[in-house]
Image 1: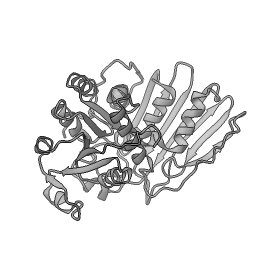
Image 2: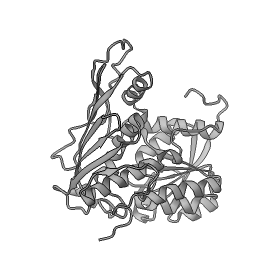
Image 3: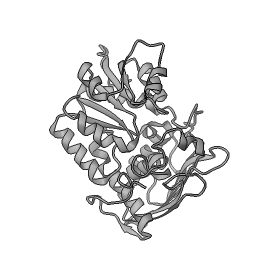
Length: 357
């Protein structure tokens, strides 16, 4: 925990949403020993009553009451993606720091509006993108920053995961345009985020998507092509329709100076590193307990450092406005069956976050 002061002030934290991802956040909050979990909130009373029943926590079905009653330094929002925008807007100015799961909004215009309102109300927003903190992914960024790749001409991203109908039925918001999005917005966004950080804004986007096997509104399978002004092409194959179980989550980078490939089920194995004149240790592979990986605890440590030391973080909401525009541009390409010339300053419209069947 480099950069964290020796005299630690524990931050008082409350969590909104006790669904599937809650366990990972709780473990990270608990293991970091930097936060004191004060209260939890969920509008489903059954879920709320069975969550952490052995802990003496204040429990709320209304997050406004939780924030009003508790002196919280941080609130983590783990609800469905479609609710993020309204909750953040409502809490702006009422709490100093908000952590929110990806994507932090669904609509393009919503992203910029949320960031501006929080800036005016002096509330900081941090977006969870824990895969950036995988050792394997950090190595990828390091090689890029050291300019050892030279010209990158091709990247391949494969996300072959399995999500059954049972998964989508486990919460009524899953697989819906207004509240979730499909395999691109929910699972694929982590991989889109890494490529976006690595290469920047694409020049053009061409995408196709459909619902192959799952009984949902949105896509469970997609193919996306980014092309950059320097000629680099990135191909994404994203699906949650693999049966019977996950196969891989991988990113391959091909350049004039060699190739670098991260694989495994969730970007946890370095499969190939042939970059010339790169003699540093590259065997950073590790085993995972689940597809979420190990990054959440590192994320919470980084947010603690940023809040306590009052320093900027790469996870600030303002850094992800372009990402939400990019996400909507991808869906727009699918809906219109056309190539999109991506403008990072444009708010693209799609079904994502607004469409109700």
